[in-house]
Image (cartoon, rainbow, N blue to C red; front, side):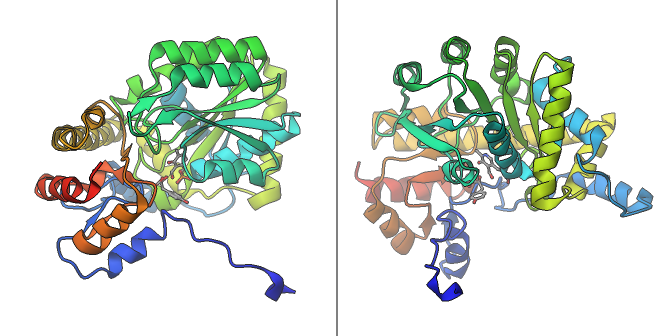
Amino acid sequence: MFETLSREADDPLLALTPLFRADPNPAKVDLGVGVYRDELGRTPVFRAVKRAEAHLLETQETKAYVGPEGDRTFIEAFWTFVAGEGRHAAGVQTVGGTGALRLAAELLRRSGSSRIFLGTPTWSNHSAIFAAAGLSVVTYPSFDVAGQRLLAGEMISVVADKAQPGDAILLHASCHNPTGAVMDDATWAAVAEVALEKGLVPVIDSAYQGFGTGIESDAAPLRRLLDRVPEAIVAASASKSFGLYRERTGAVYATSASPETRDKLKSHLVTIGRGAYSMPPDHGAAVVRTILTDPELRTDWRTELDDARKRITSMRTILAKGLSRLSPALAAIATQQGMFSLLPIDETRIVELRHRRGIYMPLSGRINIAGLNSSQAPGVIEALCAHAAL
Ligand code: PLP
Ligand code: TYF
């Protein structure tokens, strides 16, 4: 029976890492998968994470199950990190932000929603996650790559035109993957109005809080949206903001003004998780809980996250200046936010850059800005200018 299966394609982002590792070129540069890198190209464990882990190793007395929803203190502290003080939601711990999105998709299905609107380009896994849960994915173009411009007006009019009550709309909380495009306050407000008018459920993917302009400012649009719409889902990842990638740490939250509805929502989220993996893994959530509830660890973690953001911002400035010679539109790289920007380069040139210059990026032209450091940046700019020929 199994021989009838056809081979599935590899994840184009994750497949890049082994290619990069196998390249003997000492000057190679990895602008591929979205993990933060420091000036030396390392993805270090945050100091506060190490300290929290040492504390857990010392004090943890059992590995018995935590419970179906996960670590309640984590769920609450992480919600305050994302949504600020005083907002209510039904939340459960998940297997990373991806697990949160999948639970969100299943919850939408159970609530009678059958479609989700995705602005494209978007994170490569989004449509797969929602489709796997049985939702129909409706895409609409939301970014002009050559012009490096968010298609805000088009986005609002497509959704206002085509969406039906009960449909969901996916939004990136901040640091858009893959474009880095910043949605301005007026567009966020317009999205909220369309959602209200048409009875749509916003699904907000928050995976890069702290990498845009700051922990609080990155969350401000999401918080304003939560205040405006009666129901929303937030899928939050701790992978980047706490550097816990492989620990698979995240949470999903669904909002409703009614405590009874929130109780029902939580029972559904727990049941969906139970049907997939019974209970979420503990370690990453225990680390985040330890950091967020200890003022000293929290301050240290914030400092390290702030430094990561500042490094990315300075690389953005250098890159934008160098690449605006290629196309004035690329000056926008300086004001885009988060780890990614999407370069208008065709696939042939991307492969050429890989083979001739050891510069690795996926065929989409997305670059991880954190893959650059100040010594390599001039060489990368020169190579892009020589090979990209925009
Ligand atoms: N959403 C976006 C936009 C992402 O880039 C990622 C990256 O991994 C995720 C969600 C999921 O993160 P994870 O499942 O690793 O927590
Ligand atoms: O977009 C990225 O690079 C990150 C990491 O299947 C990632 O979100 C990429 C692909 C994937 C899982 C995580």
